[in-house]
Length: 64
Image (tube, rainbow, N blue to C red; front, side, top):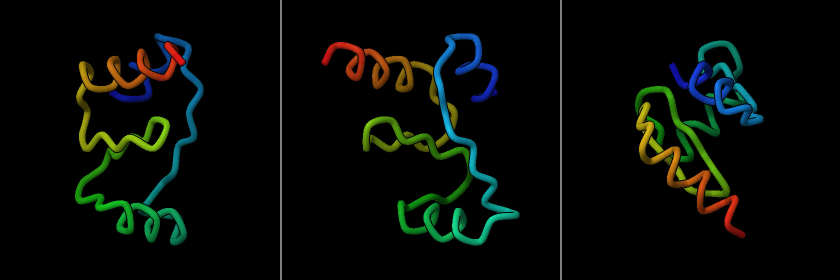
């Protein structure tokens, strides 16, 4: 869902597989992740697929 959402908006992102990448899993836990997805936009963490929160974070980033 998140990938499709970001792809449709042509947003560049880095996908990390916390099940297969030990370093990614450690970072996920360090950031307070509980259940994927954990989206981080300019340091702002969004836990779970929350389209409105993602849109708002992207808008704040673009307005800089």
